[in-house]
Image (cartoon, rainbow, N blue to C red):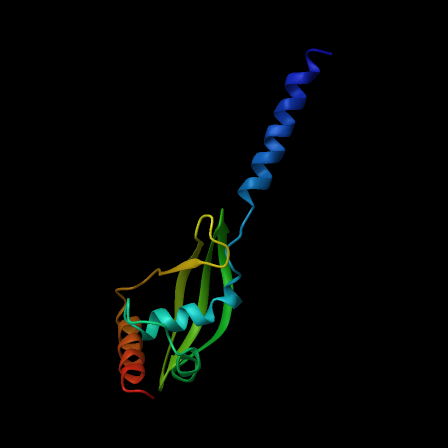
Length: 129
């Protein structure tokens, strides 16, 4: 009986670790369009966004998950601003302890296409389009 207990405990620990490693409270990629639009078109700390205007300026389609880990997802999305389009890769990370709050980080922020799309979106948003 005593030799079974350590084996049983090892199985329970393995089960808990496996469940925790797949635990993910971050939003699904398809739910992140408003955050993605905001990050592309608005400079940090510029006040509350007008999400209806953002949706008219930055069109986001073909969103899908390319990877995931504990409270994080890696996503890809097709973004169109004006006549420019690009496929952007980004990560979504759930803010610890804050439900429905998440951060987005672009995986290729120095890419020329990303910079061009972001500049056009920021110009359109700033001009009141």
